[in-house]
Image (cartoon, rainbow, N blue to C red; front, side, top):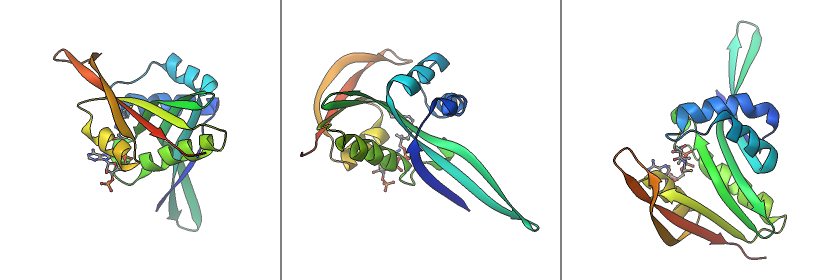
Length: 161
Ligand SMILES: CC(C)(COP(=O)(O)OP(=O)(O)OC[C@H]1O[C@@H](n2cnc3c(N)ncnc32)[C@H](O)[C@@H]1OP(=O)(O)O)[C@@H](O)C(=O)NCCC(=O)NCCS
């Protein structure tokens, strides 16, 4: 049986997050960027624990299967990256990460949440819409693709104080 918890990330998670990002993000970050995010931004991870009973002993194996990193500037916070292990998707884990980000930073005074997403990333767009993010604009030709360029969709969410 696998159980999941969402917790803040630390620099000790760097190696596992670099691997997760390389394996599950179509546009992975460099190791340096991941480490910088862990020291300069707010971060949460999803930790999965696989509990197995072998003979008389219980064996627990823990892995990181999700990561969210966001910048924090006074009353604003901007999502920089969210990624969930390909084998663990559509179980609500990204939604749990986004909820932890919003609930915990709102308690610190954040009232506006920002993010950008590739217009072709329909799954992520549906995810943000499911949490009431509104599209407020587009930046044409913002991202490179294998075929050329594509737009960034800008989303915001305002929470009441
Ligand atoms: C986008 C991503 C983080 C979603 O993670 P996830 O854990 O599968 O998302 P959740 O299970 O929390 O999804 C919650 C809701 O979002 C929507 N959603 C998520 N993925 C979707 C998809 N591929 N297609 C359509 N809707 C999707 C659905 O409404 C879903 O609810 P449902 O499963 O009950 O229908 C994951 O697909 C991923 O890591 N992608 C690669 C990295 C990336 O593109 N990150 C975003 C840009 S920075």
